[in-house]
Image (cartoon, rainbow, N blue to C red; front, side, top):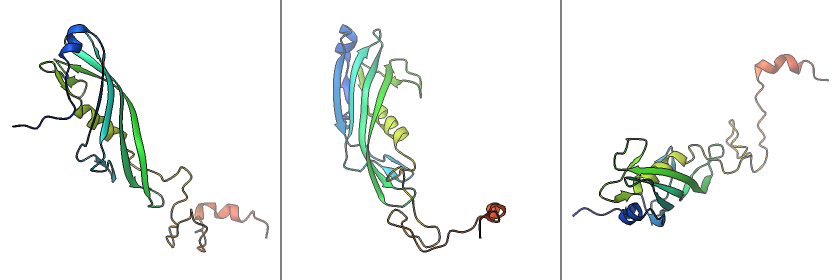
Amino acid sequence: MAVRSPFHVHVGNVLRTGNARRELRAAVLDDLVVLGTEVPVDAPVVVDVELQAVGDTALDAVGTVSAPYRGTCRRCLRPVEGQLQVRVRERFEERFVEDETYPLAHSQIDLGPMARDTVMLELPRAPLCREDCLGLCPECGADRNEGACSCAAPADPRWAALDQLRDP
């Protein structure tokens, strides 16, 4: 017997009555990794949406998808942790269009693919521990956030003409 997704929602009542309904679902999704940034394997992705009927064959899911993430700072290689909170407005239709809308079949939808797509698109590809991170020295590897290193900055030959203008 197939395991039912925790993001599976029966929406027959929403379609029949046209009344909006709030859905709050949380579950762990596997393999949420983009270029080394990941949602921890035991951390739930939370979908908090209001389902609104659009006619009798479609509905919109409007709300947020949130999940924690962790990765490595692209400049200093320190661990980075953060929280995604993404606004969503997605359509579920009986005659869905691949890569544009999500399927609605037999008065049921699965919010899981929407949650996965949202997280994968929003995970930072090159996170920073902080915006002003100075990174590592390319010569000795010292963390420049902890202080200056003793390496002389390499002279860029493109600026050599300007060095001649300096006072001796």
